[in-house]
Image 1 (cartoon, rainbow, N blue to C red):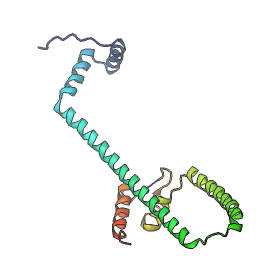
Image 2: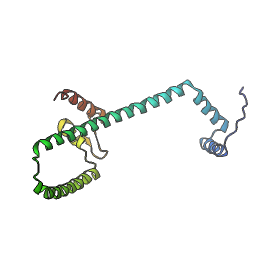
Image 3: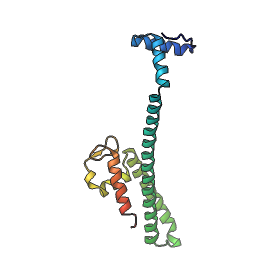
Image 4: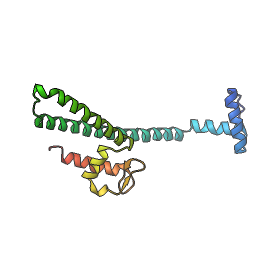
Length: 171
């Protein structure tokens, strides 16, 4: 025998409950009972925890990729600055105005090229990945903008890159 329990719901929630119960072809009390059982079930807590763990794992992988991409970007910039400082002779004072004008023109061209690459979703990281790991060429998911390995998972590609970063860390 079941116990009777009176509960009060917000009118909007009560309407939603009624609508859902009608669609399912069951009584509202059966629907509420199932919801309470699911909420109180220890399995429900485990399922919620598992969902949180999956989300946290996915966020961790995203953060690792962002960190890797940021490290690459910083290294590229540092290498460029080192090269530029070692290869650029000082400009004599009488040629500085012309050099500034040329620099402004080149910078504007750089900005235009950068804007086009960003609009096409071109990525230096993806370009470098293709050069470093040619076995992944042809397996790129260009439409989704991600590189995938044989299993269709970016983790395979990331694992190869991580291994190469470890091998080349001392260079």
